[in-house]
Amino acid sequence: MLTKYAVLAATAAAAVTAAPAQKRAAAGQADIDIVILNYALTLEHLENAFYRDSLATYDAAAFQAAGYPEWVRQRFVEIGGHEKAHVDFLTTALGDQATAECTYNFGVTDVNSFIATSVLLEGVGESAYLGAAQNITNPAYLTAAGSILTVESRHAGWVQSSVQQGDGFPSAFSTPLNFNQTFSLAAPLITSCPSTNPALPVKAFPAATVSGDVCGGKTITISGEGVQSGQFAAFLTGLNTYYAQIGDNGSVQVPAEVKYGRVYIVVTSGQSLSDDTTIAGPAVADIPLSAGEAEKIYSQQQ
Ligand SMILES: *[C@@H]1O[C@H](CO)[C@@H](O)[C@H](O)[C@H]1NC(C)=O
Ligand SMILES: *[C@@H]1O[C@H](CO)[C@@H](O)[C@H](O)[C@H]1NC(C)=O
Ligand SMILES: *[C@@H]1O[C@H](CO)[C@@H](O)[C@H](O)[C@H]1NC(C)=O
Figure (cartoon, helix red, strand yellow):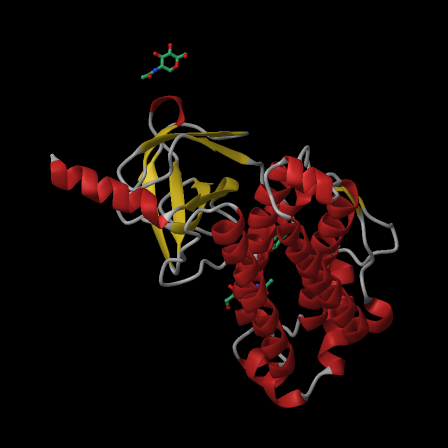
């Protein structure tokens, strides 16, 4: 894996302009643009297959039976078209180094679980591009990544508000995820990939499962392989990370600063977050703005 990584990095370094590469080299960072583009393409293949295959399964009648009008399905067809466009764009940019589509198990059992998975994936796409931004060397790729990420985030917002009739309201800052955190959320959906695909230097952490209402001040339960009391739950919200110690039976009090929007929860060995301190996760929670509002109104009434 490391060898392949070095080969890809060297190829990428040769392919892009020298100036930004030198700047990154001075900062001690290799040019890994080809790796990042293939990582992005891995996620886009997953999203493209998700919409294509799910929409082939659930026709207009299935949407109608689940309570959604025809236009909702049509918008999902449109979103699927965007993901296909992202796949085509990245595949063209990578040429013969492009990674190919894998086989997947999205765990979708009906229209509503399709819709919920759509929100999950669009939000993860947004966080993945955001987290990778700092590692991109070529400014043109950075613009392309930014151009894709705003669309992914608006897909999620549309589904949460127009389709799920929630508020889908973002907090002031979106939440970045690094490569291994993102891959940990994608890997469980990937069944197998062509052996000819380039190996990515990523690994998946054990899954973390959260039960209860994730909202500042409330107590939730977190579990997963290797998760023990005394460890910490790191709550990633916007550009901040807040920690709470895990008590008996995985109980955690959600820090008051965790208010609304997309939140990721990672179990860590201490109060610092890196791949080295990660035990399990991320788990994903989308907290509606109205959840906090309701809480506020409730506490004012006390
Ligand atoms: C991405 O950049 C961050 C910040 O400089 C660095 O810590 C991280 O190791 C980089 N990731 C990779 C895969 O190079
Ligand atoms: C992600 O995991 C891989 C495989 O274990 C590791 O080589 C890499 O350093 C990790 N990435 C970061 C940014 O730590
Ligand atoms: C932890 O869970 C066990 C098994 O359900 C239960 O017997 C015990 O009372 C729990 N401990 C606490 C402190 O809640």
